Amino acid sequence: MGQAELHVHIEGTLEPKHIFQLAERNKVKLKYPTLETLKEAYQFENLQDFLDLYFSGMSVLLTAQDFHDLAWAYLLKCKEENVRRTEIFFDPQAHTDRGVPLSAVMEGLGSACARAAAELDVSAALILCFLRHLSADAADAALTAAIPYVPPAAGAPPIIGVGLDSSERGNPPERFAAVFARARSLGLRRVAHAGEEGPPAYVRGALDALGVDRIDHGVRSLEDPELVERLVAEGMALTVCPLSNIKLCVFKDMRDHNLGLLLSRGIKATVNSDDPAYFGGYINQNFLETFEALDLDADAAYQLALNSFEASFAPPEDKARWI
Ligand code: ADE
Ligand code: ZN
Image 1 (cartoon, helix red, strand yellow):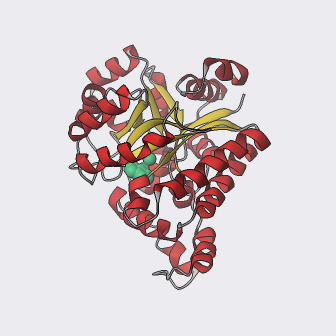
Image 2 (tube, protein in one colour):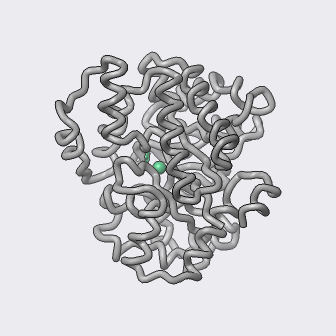
Image 3 (spheres, rainbow, N blue to C red):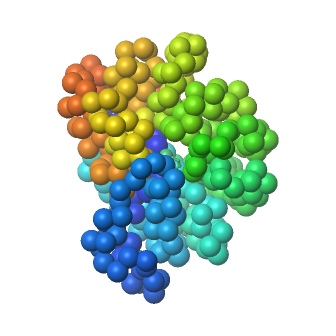
């Protein structure tokens, strides 16, 4: 059966070794003199600590080939870990704002996804994320620029949806209501990071103001019993990222993680890797560490895998093949 991965940032799969290789290839000067000093910096007290390093790490990505190599390395990992379907986030503004043309990003990511379908039987699609620390106008401009890659105009694989990521605290979802409404009118699916560091009100905001199909993270929803009822009643999936939550101090220890509680309350939770190159592992490592710490059983494993396929945006005939 395998599983679907519904929450992975392609820029967060950029391994330290690959940062150094690309820096050399592209003649980019790094702040860290050695691989060891870079790795030592991977200690975060919160989301913002991580984001600072994440945005500086991706400065080595310049050409279509770089984006292809990045995505291909991740897609090989998917094959190895029996991920049959992946819906990959990317942050176009983080590249175009540094002068990298969107066409290079799309050519590189798009060709890697098409190659994965042909050579690996891994189904991959792209979700364009807006950076929420930037303005709604900037998000709108990013959407406009991406229209050539939105179906039916695009080649395979196209952009299937939009998301909202980056610094959550102080950046509630409501500011992005208009651009999400526009994405909806273009036939795009919608997801948003909410309730990672931000309060349950941000999860409600994502549901009400953005009309999302899934919530990314959402672990703080458990603080609000009425919200939990609503998530269950609507069959709303949460894309939970356990290793990320530990690395970013959302929970102190894996034994404190609420994945088991989310499942037992009937919430459609899934397990995902978020930024595996920064957080200590890909999807299987996330399963291994949560199952061991929380003493979850085979029923939970089956439920999580089933949830991941059900909550994916893949065509029903593909889902039937995987489940
Ligand atoms: N961008 C990459 N990883 C993220 C995360 N965990 N939360 C918000 N934005 C992100
Ligand atoms: Zn994320």
